[in-house]
Image 1 (cartoon, rainbow, N blue to C red):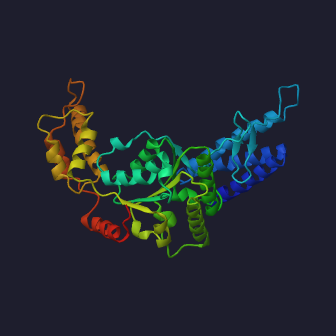
Image 2 (cartoon, helix red, strand yellow):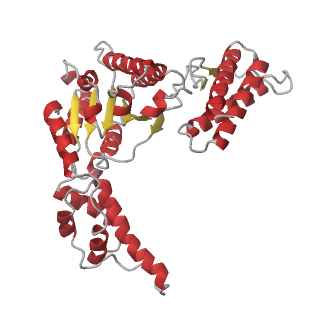
Image 3 (cartoon, one colour):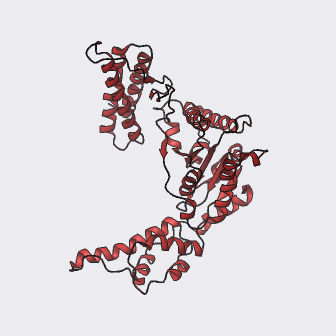
Length: 393
């Protein structure tokens, strides 16, 4: 069976199962859930590199759980069977939803959303002081004192710049600072045919965020590589246009002053020039995340070498100076590679020592002679030019 065949027929069985479930036809619901499970399991087994493999596994677990619940509900009274009124099925999503202790429906995120509890804080991120300040003014201050913002506040923030410089960490840190919920979404999952039409996924995402906000929980929707979702594409089809239009509608809805939702959309991109101008305008804050300067490089080096043993000749300031042009992730890679030299020696020499020797300055030089920056000057100039045209801090 082809990949497309398995996914399409699994979807049909799943939709039929949900409809039967909603109508109370337990036998038919079970048969269709089990058929969907069988096809999804086959897709996972035959196509391990499928981009939605993890999503399939999530649905397999959901459908198995629902089958077990339905089978328990079908046991005759007196044999331990009771109707489980704490669970219902959302016909729009196919998700099972549990009632909370008060009898009200608990809010559950769409399956394609990763809900994460961030551990990083602003003070743990080296440098980027201008970006941090702009973000605090746009999100942290309005949440703490909304009465001080009679004209409203930004709901869209765009983080752009070379890869590997902390865009995702910044977004996660914001959620931690405001004690909010951090929703990580990638463009591919929103556009997935398996999860339904793309515009429906956008609706589900924002509906969930608004429901959480109404319960008093600030929500950060972080969309990585947002240019893949909202960028200009000369070969786009109708579905992609509808997704973009729905996203515009949802972004505009967050500006409803009668509601004052604390829902914020943070988009990250390495290719800001691909974004369509209507979307650029929706991101009232557009923040450039540049390559680290010397002081920031020094802090990053201290962070990554903090748990390692360094020889006396290692000069962090000197390393920070000669690593101009290296991104934050480049610096981490250099430190790891230098440490690996000592680990390799440790295993090859089979010395009686119980740990590798300290990392020397020569180790760093050896790595730097082979590992160059991942971002070239021409690319940096493109970011700076775009920032000059669309800056909005």
